[in-house]
Length: 296
Length: 314
Image 1: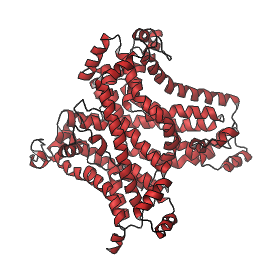
Image 2: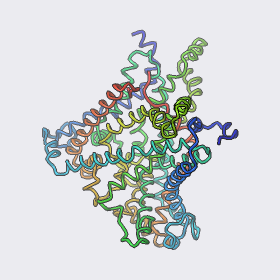
Image 3: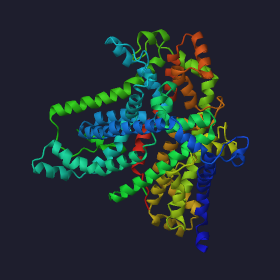
Image 4: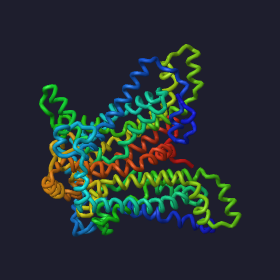
């Protein structure tokens, strides 16, 4: 007790932080009971009638549900497949540049979009793919019909993946560049002495040097497979592309806040939250098992 | 080639840009790398330049030179127009409020909380740290949060933009790790000299941590400026919309749907003064980009350092 008294000022300093998390991150958990209720706003959370697993039944039996899961997982998977290697390759290329002003200019330009919101970046994207954007002008000059890329289910997922890569590849490379500076230059010498050429040096020294970083980011991205890019998709999508682009998050927002179907939206959100938590805890476990520094 | 002048420059990027002992590449490899990197930079840069040029050109020039990179028939009409509409200025005001007041409270709470959490000898510190990390792993979800804010009467209040993200767990941990790395002996010395705990925090810890505080302050400020979701979810009264939410209705909805009241009014007014939606959209985008551009040198300097500080220690 005396020990706690001794630290009283520190508890006092911590109090606002704890209070914030308590109010905004812990207390709302009581609202999860809405998933098991027919929530009526004027009656409040407690007074609304219980409906058991009805909302979950609705969720699992709706035709929309498999579509949501498929869209979410597929978009995440394509991001991983096409997007994950880009910052690594970019960092490896930057690492070969010896002209410092050139390197710094490239970095300055490619980092920038990371700091723009998706609303702004989406506006720029729509300008590029719009009727008078460069994509359609080139197609027109080649004698093709103009494409409506902004509302086309056939290309929507590609649009999401490509614009996602363009916005973030520069920024994502920083962490690899930092790992590259940690590699002992003598190791390259050793390979050279053994007669190893450039590619051998990259294969035997550079890549193993950044492997822990690659492994960790890969596992983390796998763990967040249910996060397919809420803000980006909300900005880029429209009803025409819902069949290929509607993900769990956008669905929860639309059904819950716009259509006021609170019970169903909470159930879908809870479903996602539980799986996401299990995935991230497993990811940490795997990272620890591989002997790397774990997240916690 | 590293020149001496560049070596002198104290730039955090330099740490990362330190040349390797890798062999020089054959000329053709160097050429390919230069080409690819230049192409990537141009793909990033040119669409932004295009929008900038469009925002400064007259309406007819936009149709004649849709791919312009420099403005034709230069005019500031689009900017004059968006500054003359109270809608955009009001939104701007809301976002400036959220950014300035929000960042202040973010820093106040994050610094004090992180300082306390950096004291690993404090009884229960491990448990309390977990209490702050757990929200990163599992949250109650959108609807329960919405109902909470409704009960707190924060819906449709600009204060929701300040309080709903008061402490970002990741930033708290970053700050804590920084404080934690400050040697205990320094504090002991001040304590022996009779300084109070608050005095130590104010006179020693904060001055020592200026770079870390700047980093996290910028994290928060850019977060507020770009915050789209808080306004979208919790503010339905469009006179209180933050900039990003209004921007969506100008830039995106005018494209696809044109159903929101705001964008319709704007496009109707604009046609009277010889502006196209493209002008207005471009000027609105640039309007939202400029503040980011102004702090970009600092962002680059501090953010790079910031993401290196991550991961929970202790």
